[in-house]
Structure formats: structure tokens, C-alpha cells
Length: 140
Figure 1 (cartoon, rainbow, N blue to C red):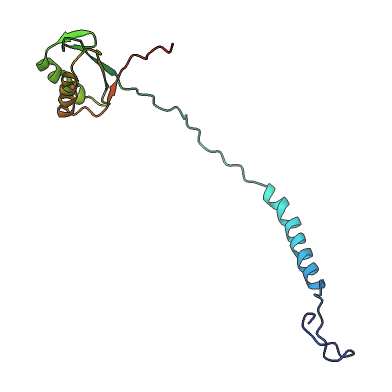
Figure 2 (cartoon, one colour):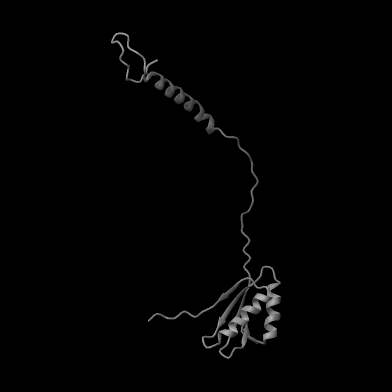
């Protein structure tokens, strides 16, 4: 034992040095183990794996544009429709899979009540994705 043993010549003094020989021995054993195992790890078994194409399916839902004119009239993709036709069209689009996005574009002069009615009708019909289209203000 190297650490904490008594030295017989000097009396009761405790030896305060660590014997490095066992540590060097352990390091040499580890070095030999690594030298032997690294070349073994480089040899691999060739396996013929199947190939698969990784093309993501890019199905984008259609976009329905609902415009609301200044007089409160609804325009479905540019065509004028009534309130009853709006509800029927929204139910038809909500039943599709994937469900199309509904983009609502309201005129800046239209009463908010008409926009809220369109959103409520879309919610009742089961439309899940509603977006608002705005005209960007040009910075001066």
C-alpha cells in the first residue's frame, strides 16, 4: 500500500505521496484494449438494404376567396352570391378533404357586421381555416 502507510525508519510519519505505478498500469491496459478493438470496429458487414423514395406528398388545399364589397355584397372567387348561396358554398367546401382555406377580404368601407356574419356562417358550416386578406399600406 502506498498511500497512508507508515514509514518504519522515520517513526510515526504518514507517507503523503501517491504511488503512480498502479495508475500507469491501468492506463497501459486500457491503451492496449483500445488498440485491439479499434481495428475490429472498422470491419463491417455489408447488408443490401432496400431503397425507398422519399418524396413528400405535397397536397396543398385550394384557396377560396370571399370578398365583401363596400355595399355588403359577398363575392365568391369573384362571382356575386347571396347570403343563402354563401352558406351552401361554405358547407360544400367544409365537407372536402383536405379542407380549403377561406380567405376573407373586406372592403375598408364595409360595416364590420357583414364580416362578422361571414365568419359566423363559416364557423357554422365547419370551416376550420380562415384568413384575412389586407392591402398593405405603402410607406411614404
